[in-house]
Image 1 (tube, rainbow, N blue to C red):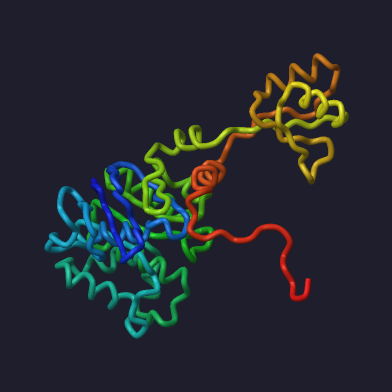
Image 2: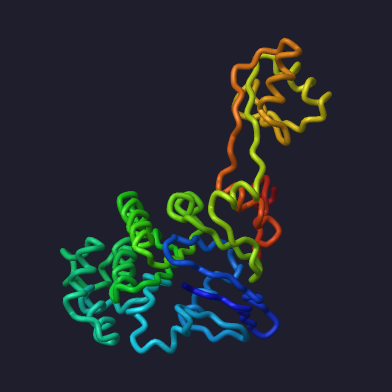
Length: 311
């Protein structure tokens, strides 16, 4: 288990991580989410012993990573797949890591085969694509057969086959009882891979929940309704005090908020307004995430018309 207790990191006047307390448990893939600047990378670096906390603790199985004699046997990590020596071959890169942690050389060939790089093991890394470097980084994380994995953007640069592969790999490792922590901005992939979520904003814990519960709690579903009499339906909803808005790309369609599908259907039936579509649109992980973090982003882009010179 990864345990964070009042974990805090300050850089002069900036607090990157603020009294963060949570457990990352074995047997599940935990998605670590938050806007840019939320403190995710700093937290992961403190878990791995690469950054020293200002206060609080980050432990793995009750110990600091810095205290493990052979840390790759305990915790596998991928933070930056590009941080490799371009003049080395893929095999030599992993062999160096293996020797530094007393891992048998045969394990290098095993993980190269596991990630699909055995055919290019003798090629220098400067010729590797981003996706190939990502696979090599994952091989490095798996090198010591660790019980804990900490991966930042694990699908970065992978093609669809690679994304499918890593998704099933992570779920398989969690099913073996390992602790798997992944940070990603790709909500669709987190939704397919993670069982549990930890969400932070501006360094503080916002949520620590199972995936389904997070989506259910953090967002409200909407009702999609389509009618050949949109003006009449809109008037009915207005009189009932039910918020709704037109769907721009579908004539006669509305998104209804704060009312159940049965309520909308009963109103329409009572007034003799035909409906061609009536369904509840369940909120997605992205909907729930954006709803929770809307006021916690460090950076926010302008919306609306694109500005042009002289416009």
